[in-house]
Amino acid sequence: MEIKAFEVEEWMNKYEDDAKYNIAETCVESLKIGELLDIASVDREEFFGRLAETRLTYGAIPGSAELRDQITQLYKKKKTIDNILVTNGGIGANFLALFTLVRPGDEVVAVYPTYQQLYSLPESFGAKVRRLRTEPEEGFMPDMNKLRSLVKSNTRAIVINTPNNPTGACFGEKLMKEIAEIADKAGAWVVCDEVYRGLEHEGSYTVPSIADIYEKGVSTSSMSKVYSLAGLRLGWIAADEAFVRECFRHRDYNIISCGMVDDALALIALKNKKKILERNMNILMENKKILTDWVNRTDRISFTVPEAGTTALIRYDHEIESEEFCRRMFEYNGAFVVPGSCFEFEKHFRIGYAPRKEILSEGLNAVSDFLNTL
Ligand SMILES: Cc1ncc(COP(=O)(O)O)c(C=O)c1O
Image (tube, rainbow, N blue to C red; front, side, top):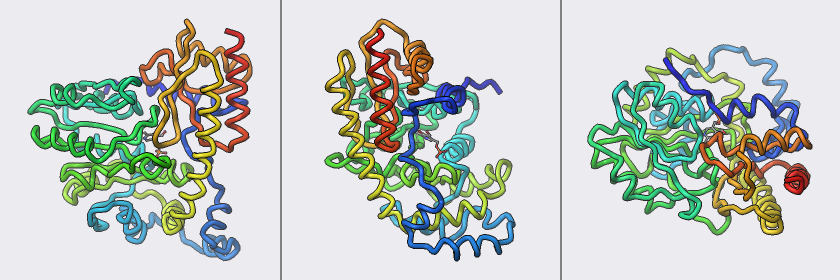
């Protein structure tokens, strides 16, 4: 199987450990286990005492019923635990959904810039991937006429990601329904990576889940971004029951279970999701202001203000390719961002603006120092 290098992951793997100012991360400042327990008012001693007595079996294979029940509550349309399958992170959910759906010779339509997995993976499974590029001038919204012309009777799936990494754009209900209609006419599925759903900014609209809108809608998500728990490696697929069963059949060849410790911690987090979200929205909104002020006062820099999520694509007006820009900056002062080339979007770089605000401010100052050398 031929597979392209996953550019953003390779970039992160290469540099992040040595970054002095890491403003490339996509999670809202990750929680410590103790912080999670405190937020949830769980007694630490009691929790760790219970953990010590836990026998480490495989646990509940598809994810515990209690956890899956909590996940169903993230969706509006009535779901049961049979609509949910727990996976190894959002990346595992995307993999499994696409692995289950895509066959050699299929056509897949993918909207980009986005997380590369969403188009490189179907390609590696032998699909012909037709891509639709979104543009900053259109607020990174897909052109529906172009989408219509790309979707054919042999289109197996339309793959989208909203709220979007890297642009921070989010699709409202009307647009999602239009996408579902286009898919429905062709008998195609819609796979929507929703790992940032729930992080819609104040004043923006809430992103509906494709699983609430469309029968053949497959929602993938995880604990990583919205709940600041990437270390759990816990995600899920929410979809029609028969499709979830089919995913489970495929998952048997890949993971047995996601681990009982991760399951237990995810359950605590989802039972206390309101409090975690309140913390995270505070971080996000404060940091978004810091980022916006910085963009406004910095010469030859601009952006499309993100409406959701944790990332923004920053455009720079300098004659230098994005990879060289980011590498030279990293070598100059250790400021670490992701080049637009990882998203096939030149003359831009991606900032993740949801770390601790001190890290963001110092990181942006370091980017300014580098810009002054150009
Ligand atoms: C859009 C998108 N999907 C999926 C992932 C994978 O995240 P995880 O596996 O931690 O849920 C990421 C991580 O950056 C992402 O940005």
